[in-house]
Every structure is written in C-alpha cells, then in structure tokens.
Length: 116
Image (cartoon, rainbow, N blue to C red; front, side, top):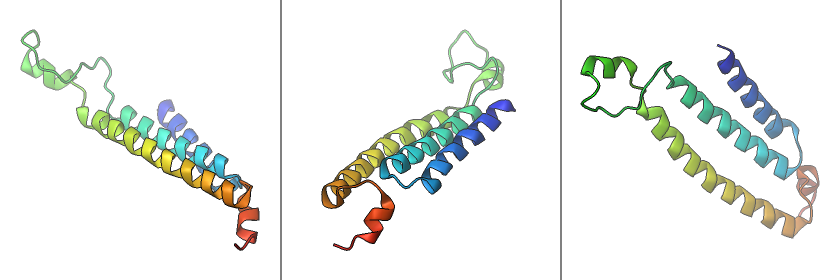
C-alpha cells in the first residue's frame, strides 16, 4: 500500500512542477516526473510477489505458470511510454530552445508580456 502512496506523491510533485513553476525547463522536468510516476504505477499494478517471467517452459506446470506468471502488458505499455516520453522530451526541448532564441528568457511571465 505504501508504494501506491509513493507513486501518488511523485505524481503530485510533478504536477506541482507543471502548475506552480514559471521556468520552462522546470515545467519540462515536471512533465517528465509525471510520466515517470505513471510508468511506475503501471509496473506496480503488474507486479506479483514470487512472480515469474511470462515464459512457459517444460519445467513448470501450466497451473503453476498461470498462478505465478506476471502480466506482460504493463511492461509493454511502459516500454512504449518510455519511447513516447523521449520523443516528447525532444520536442519540448527544441521548443524551449527556440523560445529562448527568440525571447532570451525561460520565464513564462516575461514571454507572455512580450509581443513579437
């Protein structure tokens, strides 16, 4: 139960970084923290105590395999999410660099005040 509370804590730390911070880089870090919290939630939901890899071999009986095998779907979702997060991070970094080149600041309040 405590691991779920830690996941929620990590999620709200990232959400705080997105909502309360004015620096674009800190907002991007907050978005990444939220993504990591969601990935961790998927992994925790698919975890089993004394689980085994979802590979059926001749050494394990089928009934034992169904009882102990972990679900591979959360693992596949997390791998896909990591790739999508990496592409999104590259896009946000490029956007932040372009904003800095144009306005010479990472502060969102100053960028909103500038018209040009």
